[in-house]
Image (cartoon, rainbow, N blue to C red; front, side):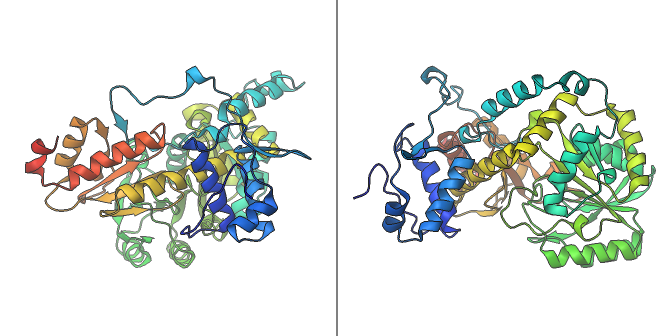
Length: 463
């Protein structure tokens, strides 16, 4: 007879062990499992779910790693107790406002971010090298932090010499520095027709011309890039290959290889903004893993851990490029914060960063499931592991009018104008990470769905 918990994973299309973890997380969040609740023995749960024992063991290991449960030899597994006093539980914003504009990772309780921050900083402060780490550092990062960065990047790029890796104070700083290192004012930079606003701002300040390249649901179109290279002779290409911001497209491996071939043939440097690359379970290998000689690979921790870290890691084509980029970083931002760089290195060494990323990935999957349910009849592009979705508006809605109506309801979204290099489509980006909980998320998405279910002229009767 099952005790405590009798989940079902029927209908879940992902790996079975992750389906068990998702069911556990959802039941904890919904209050069906209380802190301290004892979970069934693994063998009994395997029999109940009709899966192998190894599947349940793998699920429990993942749940422990992401902070959902604790286990004690001889006693069993228990739902992890919350560190937050009852009086500190988050409540919905009394104003009723929902922010879908800021593309940030959710911060689920199971990520134990505050606990990990406290423990990590305490460990660092107790180290004999702590005060030395808090002094001015090389603009490329100190050796310990660059080694940690090389290890973190190496999980996706393969083995990296530390001399080709730099530590910087966030991806936006890196983008400005890379543009300065690679492009002169007036040079042409190929970008997706819908591209990250931060890149657009950095390019404008550098005086770089942006050349839009068409794409589709799979991302940048290599044929369109080839045409641009032949007609306009760009110096560089910028793209977000995995969970593109804003379209959520992920370039398949075959397109990545073709883009690299085109870029090499035409002498085009690639700026690979891999902000979301650590989130999917099965993202194709980064372009830098196959074209390291022409690729400037940027991986920020702001999108897969916390914006508060303001740490980004960069893999550059060679040591000469590392020297150039370090000089640009010195001119722009002097150095990354030694404290947050040291904390990130500590988290990498102890496996804590992997745990945070796993918890955020899991939370994203839950939030995307809520979005699929709430927006099920709409034209939505999304990825199960992403923070955001791309919503194409039905006729007769227009993005400006829709955004204004959404604001009147207290919901903020970002229209396509913020991303478009050229004509803007009738679409909006909806970011899911800032909502404090599933209830607020569902409420805000329901308002958007209600708006879109009626023509603009009928909205006064709806609200």
